[in-house]
Image (cartoon, rainbow, N blue to C red; front, side, top):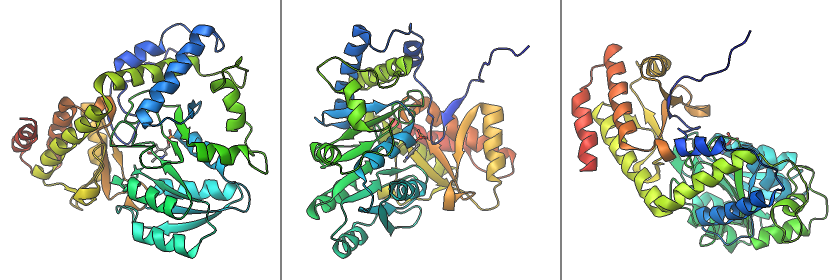
Length: 391
Ligand SMILES: *Cc1c(COP(=O)(O)O)cnc(C)c1O
């Protein structure tokens, strides 16, 4: 007989999923009701309003796609790109490469603007590309590159897109609730996020939002959206109508309770307070790590507070350190990805996991493991540096 699965207790400080707030797990376990039940439909309406609040937008087409962040990415490109169209895609990490894949699979052409893994998107390079390709219809970039821990200047990049009459498409999977994001004020036309990063919800949903300009482009398409499931023209009939809602797919009812709860928690804390909390805990972690003799792979002005790309002396066996953290402390941190594989750890401080206790745990556990493996460091000094940031 197979027995029930009980996961081990972990502290999740990797690139996502992050620790789920127990309030959200409790919401998830509430009774399932029909996805066309009037009570469920009023919860959906609240959910849309809460997402508008989190994205800082009045966009009507603001909904959670019933699938993970990658599906949100696919939803944006599948709806906006028609065969033969040209887009400028900025790539400075792994996720920008996936945008290119999406554009090409939709029959579009991706003009690539590339920056090094670990550097932000360079607005000058984007402007050169915009000048060389006046026929481009959109600019796409990743705001928070989770693969490298880099923040690009979304406001500047969106302003450029608008100046050259392009739509601005933004990956905000790791951004939402972690660092400032202003969908309307920055002129973002299409954006997608995820639930398992700074919202500290369960994985598997992707909030998306389309500006009226983007929505008009979708309505006026010459060809049907190639994906039936992700076609917003059809999804609207379920999520965005005042008339009777029609069946599109069975909404992930309990997952949506969880997302609702996570946004209620965000509203209680306040969006700006959430941004401030992420920044404070990042500064405390950075103080502790630097005291342990570790460095950052990203320059100070472009570091993501919610995802720290941490470099270490070459002689350290980085995989052995991660294994020891997991086995002895139940602490998960992430490995490097793509060009940074084997070169950095990715330490997340996302959502509910971004707190003083976790910063202390991470710095002391990492220090102890490094000492045990023969790399001398002073753990109590590092903890003192951490605590100094909080007083
Ligand atoms: C995590 C992530 C994704 C993909 O989200 P999934 O939920 O894993 O599909 C996309 N973009 C970025 C920047 C991410 O960090």
